[in-house]
Image (cartoon, rainbow, N blue to C red):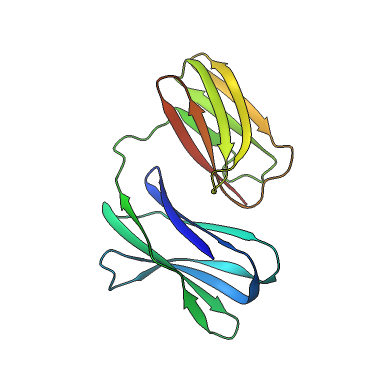
Length: 181
């Protein structure tokens, strides 16, 4: 099982993959700031039995400033459980909410999204990536003036998970996340 955490705006995203699952009931994301006391952040239902790679993700809406430690507890239907390796992130609170880029609907069904730009001028490269950093969609040299709306229809419906829209110009990089149910 691959497990990792990353910061998206003022939240921490925990992502993991399973290659196979046998009698997997659920996953529990736990957080600590001292590696001694752990609190439950969320529970995610497992697939039960699976022979294909599955991707999971969940959010910590309230990380603390500084180092946050996370571990994933995987519980089987018979109550037996195992823990992942501990992942950590040095969380820095963003003082400014970047509202230049908005995505809707969010969450989405994975077929299409609308990307709204506010106060963005110039030429941009627009990308959509999944949690593994794989490019799902790309468009180069896209021009925006002040405000704009771009509808993106995906060739293949996106799997459930967290994705990121990235707008890159000569002088800035703007990122916004969206969730596919």
